[in-house]
Amino acid sequence: MHIIIDGYNVIGIMHNDLEKARAAFIGLLIKYKSVKNHYIAVVFDGYKSGDKYEQVSFSGGVKIIYTRLGETADDVIKRIISEERREWIVVTCDRDVIKHTWSANSIPVPSDVFLDILQRGSYLLENSLEDSEDIEDIKPQKGSPFRLSKKNRAVKKALSKI
Image 1 (tube, rainbow, N blue to C red):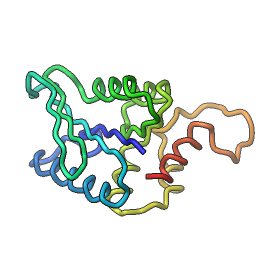
Image 2 (cartoon, one colour; image 1 turned 90 degrees about the horizontal axis):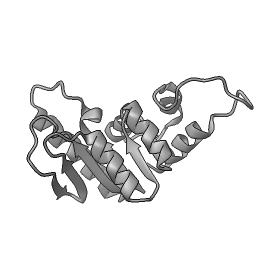
Image 3 (cartoon, one colour; image 1 turned 135 degrees about the vertical axis):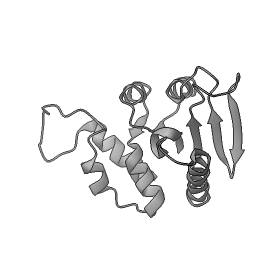
Image 4 (cartoon, helix red, strand yellow; image 1 turned 45 degrees about the horizontal axis):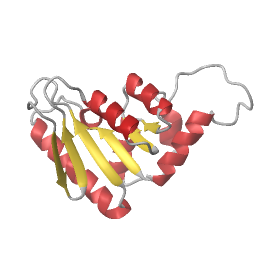
């Protein structure tokens, strides 16, 4: 399982101490990786205050990427899932990234659902999945009204692996 995460999309940017919030989130990811042993990459924006070059480091087996100045985490995530052809689980709520994720044969997972899984250690996903409207725009569906859409079934399957 390969998971790539839009870091600030998950933790937000409204913190008194952004460094502390990042460190706490990375700590959660390291604990999660020690249990699940998935490949995990987290991307943080350096768009406005980043370095001239993309910075990559590893902590506890988690790949941490800080984008270069002028590049967004969304751009890096799209590039990675396009270049590395495999089924990714992409943790974001950004609609443009979600659309690109589906087109790259990968599966988007809403940030709030993933963070809830990390914080609670909960794998009871049915309620979280049904409450999230970020997965797919609501459209009239064909077929059984009691069956999840193909995209929602794919997300539910991916979440069961997380």
